[in-house]
Image 1 (cartoon, rainbow, N blue to C red):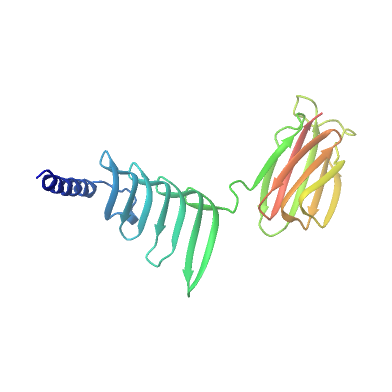
Image 2: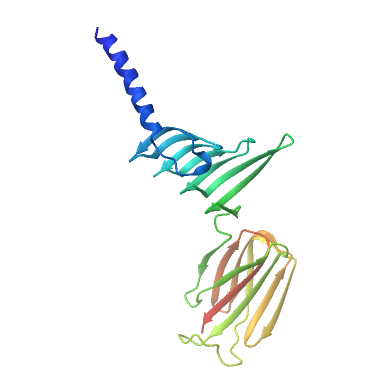
Length: 231
């Protein structure tokens, strides 16, 4: 008798949970429809699956895809990876299918936009204490160059040193990648060095007398780097 009582009780519990999911809101319009999964305060929260015009299965938070999950389009294309408030965010893989062929894009997304193969396009591994705030800017994707502008500043003032005190590159040790040619020019108490034909990823330790900087650039393209030295 006890077993017969437990079976209908179990079925009632499942049906009740399913009814709760019918009232569990999903806030991303493209996947609104049928939701099954965890719910909190009337919104999808936890692990679940929502099927609308498109399909999402994975983590939810307060009604939005957030965490890790798989988003599938009607044509079979899908993205699996990080999400934040309904947008692709973090590391992921985008699979596209056309004419029986699959194209795979891997890398990092931020607020729904693809940032590239690497989370950060460059990283400064180490600098000596006399080097100020280094500015690194990507100019374009076409030219494989690195322009390095170094300027010696009067200690603590932020102003350029008098003529004759220009700091120049005294050493360049390449630890990853390579380059084809190097040129240097003095201009307005600054030295501008250009490395051309770079193979990326590129990592180098640059020396300016007793000052050094270790930088690694992952994305190919034309880069501009400005190094202030407080001397």
